[in-house]
Image 1: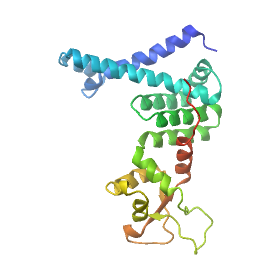
Image 2 (image 1 turned 45 degrees about the vertical axis):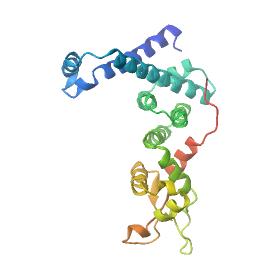
Image 3 (image 1 turned 120 degrees about the vertical axis):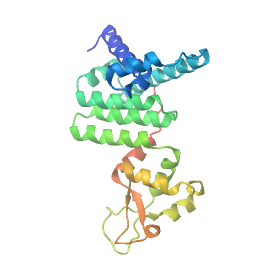
Image 4 (image 1 turned 60 degrees about the vertical axis):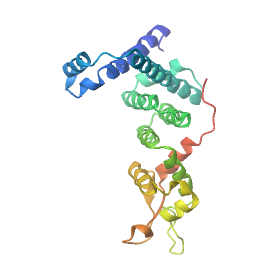
Length: 240
């Protein structure tokens, strides 16, 4: 088990790394550490208002980073120190935790941040590599979803997936026009929303047979999409 002192050292190291990335972000494009130093040195002097804004953003990001660990501990019914011990004991878990924490820093929707914590908690609780892989896919999908994507997924949940028992009498999936009939607010960006969902692997083409017309194609949630929606819908109360 990590002591309180060693855990603070680990957390401080993570904070310092994040702060360094923010400070040298513009310079990274120049190339390597030297570019980072050059970029930081050549940056214009910030106004007091800009400095205050940056400090506010940094505080918010650090607060959300800590929130991830608290919520993972809450889901698992344990303490944060035990979670940290588990994360640092496995490179795969540590890499996933890093991705989840960095993603959560810039997510304003609490529901998404808590869902990310649930995905990480699932990997912490189950040592099987397959669980880690699926948790990573779920976390990636959740990070890429915005409110319109989640709304479209909720509609598509009622569509019969092509993976269901084959039956020529069943109508698989749902056309895009049918989706927008149920939620007219999705109409303007419907195609772009759908393309993003397919790209993330949470929605799949459910057309039963070949069709050459996009307007005739039907879609449904993939198995991954159902797992993602389930993770997002958890109504547990986040840790305080």
